[in-house]
Figure 1 (cartoon, rainbow, N blue to C red):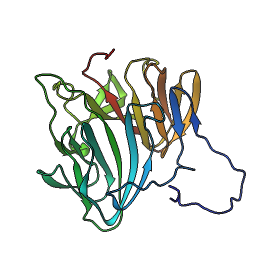
Figure 2 (figure 1 turned 90 degrees about the horizontal axis):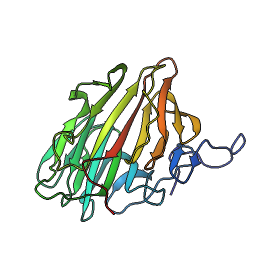
Figure 3 (figure 1 turned 30 degrees about the vertical axis):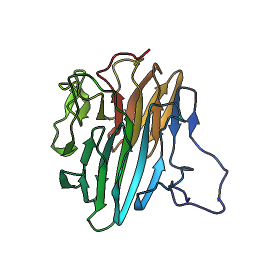
Figure 4 (figure 1 turned 30 degrees about the horizontal axis):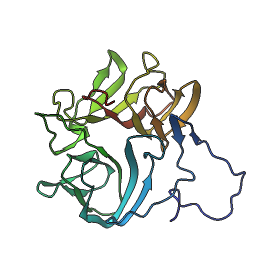
Length: 262
């Protein structure tokens, strides 16, 4: 199985961990996360982060695709929509028909009925983030494959604040065929949300840069690069950036464009 941080054996200090798991939210630090074996992933290290067992309606993963690593049988099952984001590396991605090579910041989304195929075609490891959930169909609308690079997307001021910025991966704002979106939210040191949010949507968030303070329900918690956050429906939530050198930034998912199912 192995561990994400590749640390095994005796510790030189107390056994301790910043991870907190509650009924409707969680903060999971990388120390203690394990590597999982998933059929079809060749020469890859995968860590399952968010899942229905944690409380969400989706699953999030971290993946390291070692040199030559691949999935040629296709990732995904019937009814699932899928997303793969590449932090760094050179990876050939495909939905079974459209094939492209993406580099740092590249991503692929495929709708229900398709799978993601990939292969690391660069030198060294490629690191990525994966997401899946069951698609909610809407009569008269459908999603489609999207392959792009987030570095080609312009930053937008978040709710009128110039020191908090956001990028969207998918055209969910204008296309009701999409029932979710992926975003990047970035805070300059000292900036914060305009209010504490409490909403129906769920989030899974992976912090890839900087440090911050996050409030989840009634607890303020320090978080940093490498941490994963799960935020369930109606969990009060907000953040502000701290630190000196890096912006506090994370990639996160959000369900959207659908009515409540009773």
